[in-house]
Image (cartoon, rainbow, N blue to C red):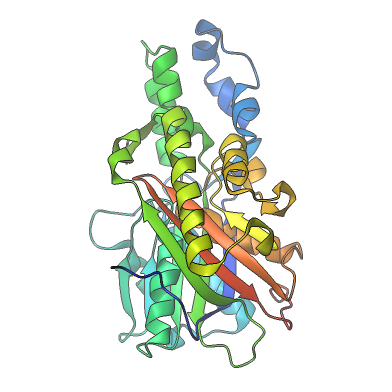
Amino acid sequence: MRRPPVYSSASVLAWARDEGPDILESLALEEALGPLMARLSLPAGLIADMTGIEARRLYPSGARPSLGAVNAARTLFARWGVRPEEVDLLYSTSVGRDFLEPSTASIIHSALGLGPECASLDLGSACLGFIDGLNLAALQVDAGLCDLALVVAGENSRPVLESTLDGLLRGGSDRRRFFDNFATLTLGSGGAAMLVGRDPSGTRPRLRRMISRADGSSNHLCRGDFGGMTTDSAKLLVRGVELAARTFAAGREAFGWTPEGFGLVVCHQVSEANTLRFAEALGLPWERVCRSYPLYGNMGAAAVPYTFDLASEAGLIAPCSSLAMMGIGSGLACAMMEVEIPPGFRGAPPA
């Protein structure tokens, strides 16, 4: 029987994010869809009202997903004084990839100037890729197979947004087609990076343990490729929340988790409705759920570490507490990771 991982010595030593430079407000998206929304009698403000997303970030035209990951890693190196040649292992965990081959990790490896002994690979698990990357990195560190593992994600939603807008406006779109593509309109862009290793100072967030569950029978509810994404949002929400509840129950049984035991919850950012239902199903206090979706949208695998960095910057992560990183990825899969915040924690150094 598969046992949930418990880590003995792995900590998050450094972290950083990268913001797409262009701001796209939900009202601007609706203006672009104006003729269609008028024909379908859809009210102004629909996107923000249904999702809680006021804006999202985009990278410039022609940018590839690796850009956000590379920028975030470079910020991490500069912020924390890490040399690229110190990194032993690189996981690229983005939903988006530059090409089918070579691996996006190889492109990031080259751009960062990582050494020839640094192993690198793509690790995909939809929007859960980063949490799974942290899990595997922590296991490698615990096993003594590497000293420093870099986990990155970069998402650029501009191509899929533009493709979706073009398809919806081309003609013949009805309400069903609009809402089948609605989840695409929530997507944002950004990058994130975390460095995992042993922490002799005892001041960095310590990775403790993780629980995961899967519902592969729901893999048809969200399908996407380079050209677009279609989603049965209603069924995806119901089954995702059900899976999250089962996953948290497994964490309660295995580790004694309680909703009140986490000082802060950093979860994957989809929309307000999804996040609220997620919190209600797990009994999580709403004020402890850190939310980045209103201004940044859904950034795929980058959302959890991106939101962690925002919370660190805002001083929301308290010393002597437990933090949870959680997410649901299309497929469906759910993962929840407990992070211990030590007494000496001070957040990230100034940029």
